[in-house]
Image 1 (cartoon, rainbow, N blue to C red):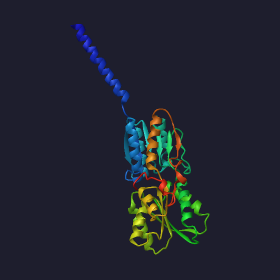
Image 2 (tube, rainbow, N blue to C red):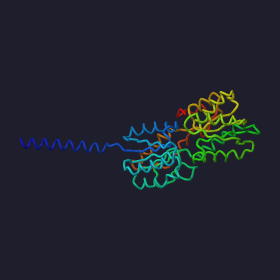
Image 3 (cartoon, rainbow, N blue to C red):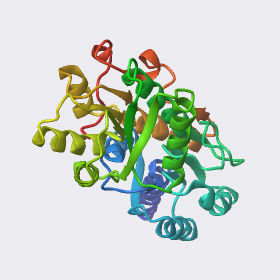
Image 4 (spheres, rainbow, N blue to C red):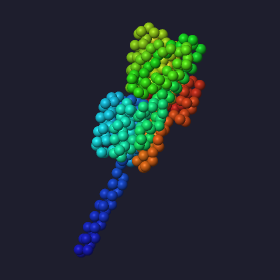
Length: 327
């Protein structure tokens, strides 16, 4: 009887040890996602794809919403590091250079870092990581997006000796928009017939900012032939121009490749657009995190490297593109 009791005791103990050990083995990895803005429709498309990959690989994601506030994002990154909870951090930076010291601290603490969508570093012309130890950087360089925007503007202004352009920033003054504008200016500066006659700011949160910016510019009485900006802003511009009976009289050029942009180009209410792939970015970022957690770094990844016609969408090739977000 004593032997049977002792045997039963060790059997139960062994089972408990096995259960505990198994739970340790399958314990999910914890990854923090530092979002520039959870309300941003582009990043929402990225998050959906990130979550799908994470769920398939036993990863829990905790999202931090910086609401386009650089100071808030810095504090969130510091809190994530100090918590000791996270195996990895995916960063969509608002001000990438400012995050570098804390990212270096995270790497020193053994946390894997993957950069999503926005450059972390001073060079806004490349997708490559600019901090030693970053596992992957998944983004289309903003300067390159700006040159694409400029090339489409040159096309829109062909045959017009005095082509007047309105440039709508997303958020004026942040590194992303500065780099886009620099790439845009570097292209159009070679064409004396093109002149930027007005600017606005549409934000990245939907059409409302574009509506307000377009109304403000029209209220000044300025005439213009082309309007360029992020898709969210161009959606707002399209609404105002339709209300004013100006659809087709102003050539709209978007940046993002959203469903409204592709529809607008297809039906002729938009002139052109630069394609974007937020879903692909999100998938590649979380796949890179999975690899990093398993010891493999992917380095720089440009999600647009294999898209048709360098992502320049016009009525001639719009059938080649499928939107990855709703705008």
